[in-house]
Length: 337
Ligand code: FAD
Ligand code: NAP
Image 1: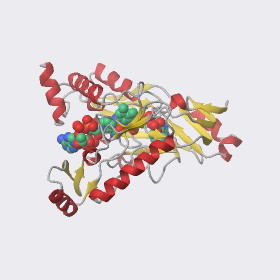
Image 2: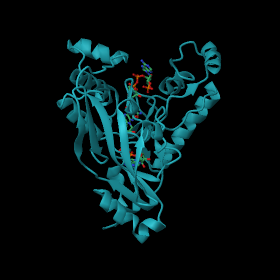
Image 3: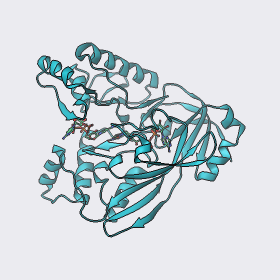
Image 4: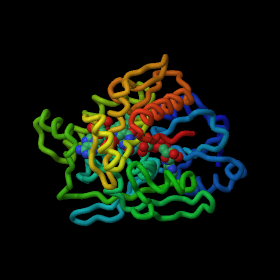
């Protein structure tokens, strides 16, 4: 097993931050991973598991070992009249898998089209968009315990999925390498979700019916019109999570901010973090080569050559101002290294 030294991570994080990792190993299968675990370098280093790098912000060079996930393969495990159970290598590209599912007529993940990154990261923060989350189609995952090299299986409950959360982002962070993820998708009677306003408008604009293919196309078109393409402008999508506040706190807030954007959820009200930030005048603010995106206040951007620390400090200023104005604690969604 070859471990590379002084590995350039610039092309491996969608923020495009120029950083390097002291060591890096490309993992193509479970045997590779076990061989790495057995090395002295692994035993003596801290580590980062990296997929597409679309949900990370590097604030400095990494002095440890980066495990680059390239485990591939798509395998149908079980099939019935209504469902397919399909296992996917964690290093497969998420959006390519979505397109593969649609081509095969498998439903359930069309609303999650065009989310960058790997299959292996999809359970990490229970990726979600347009009213659908990975937990809705999740069957199980395989992950290697990096302390022992053993493969363990996690079902939906063991993953402890929450809003942009899972056990792998909190209690088990960096302890397990997710190697394969299995999803249960529909073959007929698809449960279509067009409840997010923009999807229905897009379908109507195109004069097409709601089906998995058209929903995917609508989501792709909406995303392309609103979100910065990381290939052109460095970013990691939403930098902050939408905060959930208790109903009593929400009622107080609504008195001061009658137009506040909110959605009822279990345990209170979800506030649109983008709205909170936008109201404070951050949208489009630019500091030389980085700033807040002009169309979406949740997205921090690197126009080229910014340092991770500058973006991290900017996020801190936004968090402080949101706290001061609304008494709401914004949490970073992006993983900081
Ligand atoms: P990485 O950035 O490589 O890793 C993210 C975290 O997961 C890191 O902590 C890493 O250590 C860990 N990790 C990665 N792979 C593994 C593994 N195999 N085993 C264990 N840990 C692992 N997210 C959404 O939820 N919804 C969206 O709609 C959405 N839209 C986005 C739009 C844009 C333009 C961008 C840039 C990002 C968006 N994101 C969105 C965020 C991001 O794409 C997702 O979180 C994605 O799942 C990250 O995948 P990745 O492979 O790039 O993960
Ligand atoms: P949007 O449609 O302008 O909506 C703004 C916010 O309001 C979103 O954050 C969304 O919450 C919430 N929202 C809208 N309609 C809702 C409904 N019917 N029920 C409950 N909540 C609703 O958002 P956008 O920025 O264009 O993003 C569209 C979707 O893509 C969202 O689901 C968003 O999460 C996802 N996205 C995620 C990332 C990321 O990096 N995490 C980046 C880009 C887009 P939710 O965020 O909870 O859905």
